[in-house]
Length: 531
Image 1: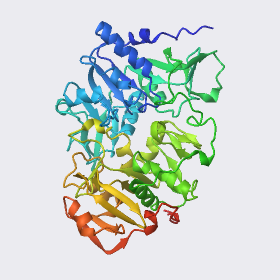
Image 2: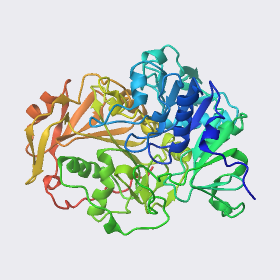
Image 3: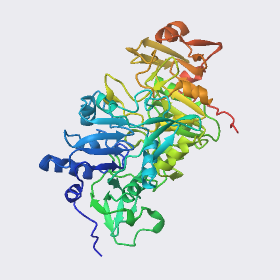
Image 4: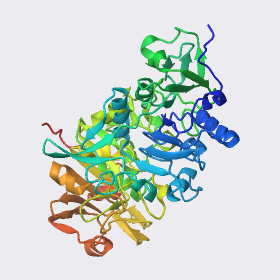
C-alpha cells in the first residue's frame, strides 16, 4: 500500500501554526532532522509564517560544523522563546551561530535547563502531570535564587522555574511546557509510520517527545532516510510505533552525524578491532587525562563528558585496561569505546544504546560510580562553570546533561588546564611552563554556577579537580592542593595563579613522574568500592 503519511518537507512545514510549541529531537549533529528544520525556515522566508514559536530542545539541534539545525529557524519573528538543554556552540574560527546572536541581542526569550529535566518534562506532559519536582539544579544557575535558567534579560523577566518547600526540603519545580508539534528523526519508516533506528548512533528522546505531543492532541512529524513496505520492519526494531506518527518526511541524504554520511560502527551494526582506535597525541592535555584515569576503580560504571575527559577511554586502551570499566554517555550508549570528533556522543562496540531519557534517569539517581567531566572556571567554593562565558557565550553549549549527572554522582573528577592559553611541555618526567596562560580559570566567583560546591559538601560527594600542574580536592573550607606536578613550584605556579587562597595539604604529594613520559605509565585501577 502507498503510505498516506508521506508528505514533502514543504507541506509538513505548513502544518505548524503561529504560536505553536515545537519540540525537536536531536543531539547537535547527531540525529538532527535538518531537512525539516530547513523547510520551516524557508517557509518563513517566503510567507512570514509560522511566527512566534516556542521551541523545546532537550539537546542542541545543529552544531555549525555542517548541520545548521536551529539556525535555520533563527530569524526575527519566527522564534519567540527557546527552552534548551544546550545550544550549538561555535568557535573563534567560525561566525557566531545566529541563535546565539538572537539570545545575546535580547531578541528572544531563552532558557537553559538540564537536558534530563527537559526529557522529564516531556514524560510528565504525556502523563498529564503538572511538571517536574526534583533536586536537580539546586544552587546552580537553574535555581531561581540565581538566574532560574534565564540566558538574557528578556527571559529573566518571565521565570519558568520555581523553588518549593515540600516535606521540609527544598525542591525545584519545572512546570510543564506542553508541545503541540514534535519533529523527530529515524532511519526507516514503514508505510504505516513505524520507525526504526538502525543507522542512528542514538535513539535520543524521540519516543518521549512524540508521546508528549500525541497525548495532548498535537502532530508528530518524522524525518527518515527511507520508507519500506508495511510490516517489513522486525517488531523489536521499532522504537516509535505508527500510532504516534502523523507525517513522514523523506530525506535520503540525511547524514548520520556531522560530516559523516554513514558508518556502521557508529550505529552498532558492526564491531571493530581495538587497533581501529588511535591513542591521544602526546601533550599536557593527555597528561591530565592520564591522571584523571587514576581515579577509576575496576568495574566502575563511568559517565564521560566532552573535552579532556573524552580521552580517558583511549588512555585505558593504551594501558591494556580496555573493558575494565563501563562507559555511559548521555546520548544513550553503554559500554564500548566512546568516539571523538564529529562522532562524539556515539560509541563503537557498545553493549547497548538506550533512550536518552532512560540514561538520564540513571544519572539523576546516581546509579553510576564516577563521572569524568571538564571545567571552564572554578571558584573558591568549589563551584564549576561549564555553561556561560559572558564575553563569548557562543563558545559554550550550555549545561546539557552536566547538572543531571553531577547532582547525585558519588565521585566527580573535573579536568582542565589551570590557566587558559599557557604554553606547556611535558617530558623527562616533569612539566615545564614555558609561558603562563593569558587568563585565569580559578576565579573568586564563577560567572555561572553549573555545579555547586556547597551542595556537593552537603551531599557528601567526593570531588577532585585535576589539572596539568596539580590535583585538588573539595574540602569543607574550600579547595585543597593534594598533589603537585614534578617541576612545578607550588607557590609561583599554583597559589599565585589563582584569584583566591588555596589550601595546601600537610601531606602534599608529587604526581607520578611516569605521567609526564611519552610511554605507557603502568596505570593500575583502584580496587572496587562496595556499598
